[in-house]
Length: 339
Image (cartoon, rainbow, N blue to C red; front, side, top):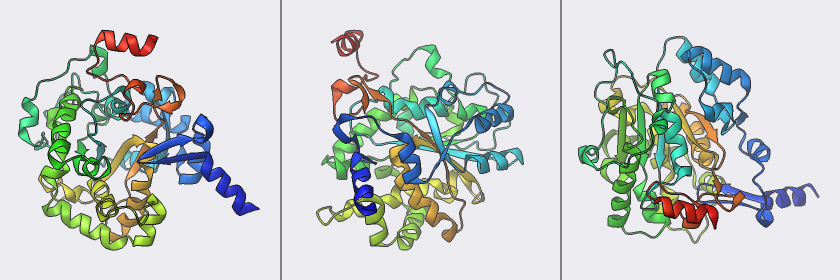
């Protein structure tokens, strides 16, 4: 009976990096997700601590519970209070021409750089990759969109991964089309106004190699096939490209993957703002990290941005009518919202 009940609960909702759905079109039960994934609820005590350490009001996403769960955020704050820096890691899987509002949530949360003094910046080599990204035309957002938070509040660097290789494998896109979408999405990310002296944007097709690839091999050797099937649900019908991808998303959690940024700083901690559907990648990463000599990455996880059709779904690039894109015209937005 217990096994039957567990199976029924499992079928009630599916949340993984490639699918988010609830039974019969219902709402996602985030309390059940916390129990299933083993993360912790982000409580007021931690939010108050962030305010104390940064000497500024908590971001609205914290105050309103948009970021609702975490893994080891307290340990990152402990280290910061001791005077140890950390870095931020977030990303985007480029499967559409532009970002929608749901995609913007981690970028809006990680950035708040206006008026910052960078004269004592300990990471002077941070920049965009490839350099041509910096010359891309920018989409202009309202001033309020630049009041993002973590990067400036904690004065830390940020790495942004564009997983064009992943979308090539999961969305049946050509390599060339995946690369093109990565460049288009990079323009939207740059337009968020990140501090260029503390931000590094890279695409997997352009960057993977060297120290990054060495860490991928180390991770791959620590995760059995049975383990990766258990975490991600791969089947015999999935090609080996999918099975081999998780280390690619794991290793930006390790500072040695970026020797041009963090040379000699292998003890640097990593904090990852992401939607909770990305948690499986980092459960795997956290299991492996101590075995190859790194801190477990900490996570701060967000709810899904609701679809225009209602809170039972999330905004998705797979359904253009569910989302408002940054390239939508006023007329497009009016039609989507009103009809």
